[in-house]
Length: 107
Image: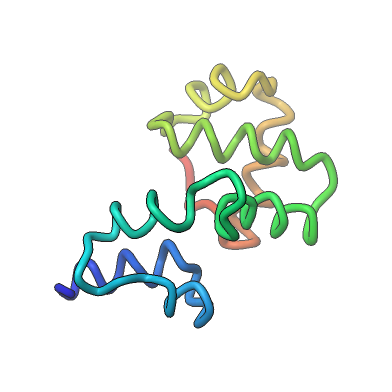
């Protein structure tokens, strides 16, 4: 695997050895992830929800914010509109996600 694919694999697998062992180094990260770990009963499919439930309440709101970010919304206004969370409440959710390391600073 190239260094870039190694980094992507590590990132997608959250550094968890069990997930890392499931990746086939002869296949691309995308193929590995979609074939093995994105299916209906795949372990990584619900990893984000599991981690959020361990750390936070109101998981649906945090998930909506992360989904907005993941789909290309980068400003607070865009994230607010995409997630359905008002501007005032969004700051709280973003702050929590940044402190936990799930999101970076938002413009």
